[in-house]
Image (cartoon, rainbow, N blue to C red; front, side):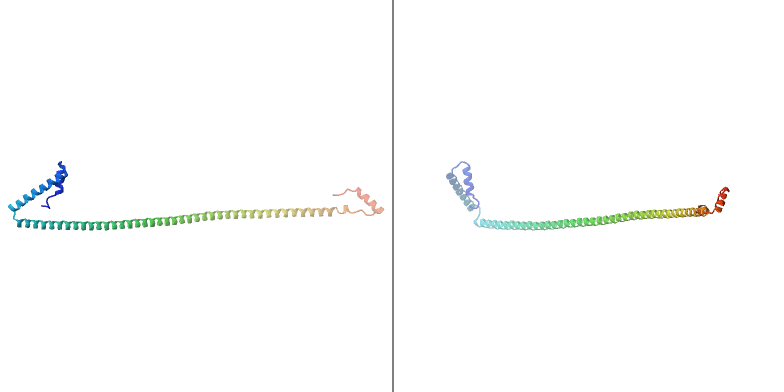
Length: 222
């Protein structure tokens, strides 16, 4: 009877119905007494004591078995949940590791491609610099060659003009020298021709003076 009769709940029900604490307690005891008396009468009248004990035993066994099953099922559920959580955590860790590895691999690939691009860009820049240097060298060589050719041409022209000037000067000198020589020869010839006329007159005798005066009367051939 004690297992099925909730005395506290009965007292609270009586209090909620408007009874005082003492009245509720008294009514609960009276109700318990009446129920106990009815159960005793029923037990004596309809159910042998042995059957009730068997029923109670079976009930307790079923209760224990049900409690075991519930406890076992609860433990199995908790174990399954724990295993599932471990599996999920392991899968999450694996996924996290794979993601980190993939990110690192992508970073390495990007860095390698950037380094490759920089290397190719440097090679291209060096090639352009070499081509530019070669082009500058060719332009400078062509300019120097052209300048040397012009200098050689100018020097040859200057040399030819110098040689021509020297030849002209030599011809002029030879002409002047020949002219001077001719003039000198002409002067010498003139001096040789007029020499007797320019000779000093020596002391003449009377006969020579008369002959000289007679010579003045004759015409002079020039």
